[in-house]
Image (cartoon, rainbow, N blue to C red; front, side, top):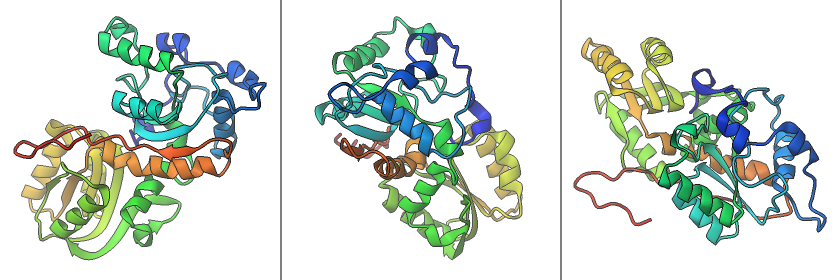
Length: 306
């Protein structure tokens, strides 16, 4: 989720936080294990020291499984710690997972309403049995200067030269490449299967605004309507709200386009960058980016082997 306004700064006193997340005091007390091996708590402490912004008193950025004293064999960054990702990490001794999105099906990581659900408990048991420490790292990576997700997406797409303001890599300028070609280049760079597009395929692309992750109608309509935006790129949005508005705007004669990438692929580049960032201050263990597969397959096309 890219926009901090929509779903960040969640009370840490939630039922889930009380059961699975750990307090600042716990983390402050978590030092290197007696053997000298790195712990999950020490990794989080270093993230706090290096992220470049004060740690928010209310945040979803918490340790959700294992304990701060868990000894870390290796670290994975990922966009979403799906069960498939968690299993891959366990098989490769990456027992600390830094995930951008929730592993537990709700941004705030509350599980009280599904605490007896067999899928949830399978995942929790799997993590417990293999001592997997999952750290939700969302709010502060977006608050990083520049936004870590936006910066990573620009790098993955090769758009560094198109950034209007390096301090805000969400606005870009291009030389009039036709929309269809522009989207095809995105598809190839992201290895995407299900990008969806509104707009004339021949539309020349000049001014692009990005909102990686989710974008709602409240923020999306003013951005799409702005003369400064010809093409809006988002991860996902509601089809009966922003998508309908964009359809009507284009039908009314506005030469604009909307590109809906899909939530996972629209922020994954930021977690590629996160792996490199972590390596700048953690050297004791391997650090690798583990992709979260694009969730959907397309009717008429066979699903990819995972």
